[in-house]
Image 1: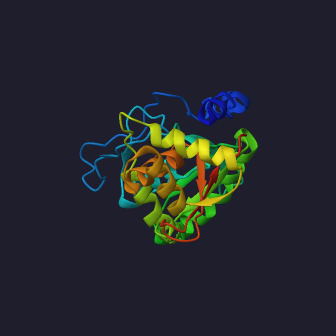
Image 2 (image 1 turned 30 degrees about the horizontal axis):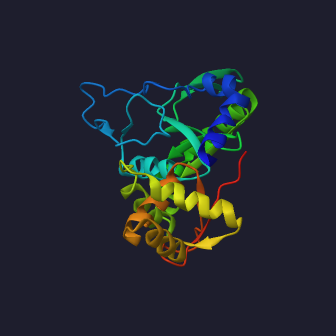
Image 3 (image 1 turned 135 degrees about the horizontal axis):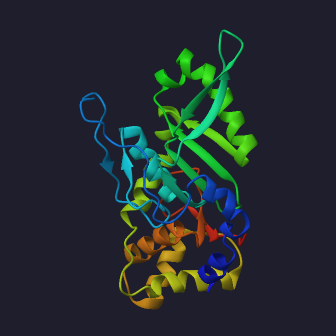
Length: 252
């Protein structure tokens, strides 16, 4: 019941047109392709995408992009995203006083549950600090804000490998497959709704496992899937364990 209410209030209902202009639509095709003869260009990898990824398939061209896929797929604040969306056209001033038209293709476009549009680029720090990028980045940022009311965010190794976020994302993603019997998920949601307060994962798993006569580890997996699907919020200040806080996600 909590999930049905959250889905009916999808932020896509409020900014659908802007999101579509940025390529955030179901079945979107990534725009980058491998170019024959350009042997230094990596072939696309394929990420085992979650339901949050609207792309028809989910390629990545670096290990950093693969980590970005993982973090987007497991972030409860993210409603949906696409990878390698259509390029942005923007202008920069040239040495003769005129303007040059340029193109920029980000790694991801994401929509948050509270309706914000994010443009995300997973970029190695050495490229993020390169003089060429630093000259163009303000123009790209301004164009996205002006034309689409979207915020440009650059993720380097520092953000993509930060702990405990990365470890927690990997923990959640291991539990992404739903079992045939989802009674543990409904039992956890009912208990949280009934009490209306924060709990710790450990006591919830113990209580629900006794109620359903199953293993606490099974309930833990259900908690991870619920967080992935946006039912609940987990404390993020430590690696997930029995002391991690758990509460129902606020409806937006």
